[in-house]
Length: 314
Image (cartoon, rainbow, N blue to C red; front, top):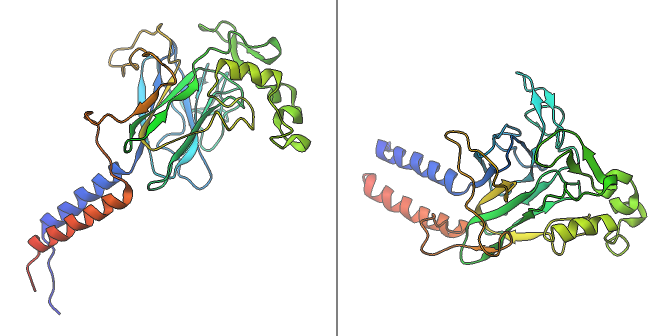
């Protein structure tokens, strides 16, 4: 049986192809700190999905980081405030703490915390995402899909109102300093009172029985697109197919002094902000990513053509 020697050019081609595929089918979360102080974002992967490249880090005012994920990833992203950590990453945060460590390492956020939740679709399947205040609120945030697949439009969502300023006294978490004053978080009613009625649990574990409360209505009026209680699905869950999601904390703040070399904050909001629809512009310089099946088909054709021209006939 003759031995086929694979040319080095072909090996190089497959290496480059593998690299391109890894980049093409990844999703990006761009986390921006537009607050006038440092925050410490945390990430938590859902069951059966791998953790993001980091599960907790410091993000100074005016800076941003990009975290890559894979199709099918499910999890939460939030921001911690008022944190102090030693050289080994041990410490605590005033809000959003995740087990007293810089890297959350599988620990969730201690309420009250504003949460971004998402499940990325596999192949052509849609992404499902929301911003939740079911566990309370600590910071305003805005989520914007970018690089939308095809011609479909996707909705931004979030809670850009500073709920700490108008939080009912019985829900307030007091401490620290900053532009919010002494209130650094606003508890949910279920966290504050521990009642099944507010948790939508026990005999209230039914969307017909568990209705919006006085407190969840306050949250909903301030942030109509965010989850305000457990069964607030209809106006709070969104679908999209996007390459990138911008997650901006304190999106309307204009009080920051950007450190040298800092990643610039998003541009000023336009008319319709923050809930305008985001749609892929055909004239944009953004990379167009084909659906999975069509991409694989084209790659197979390219590989076969390359092999035919490269390998000697035997």
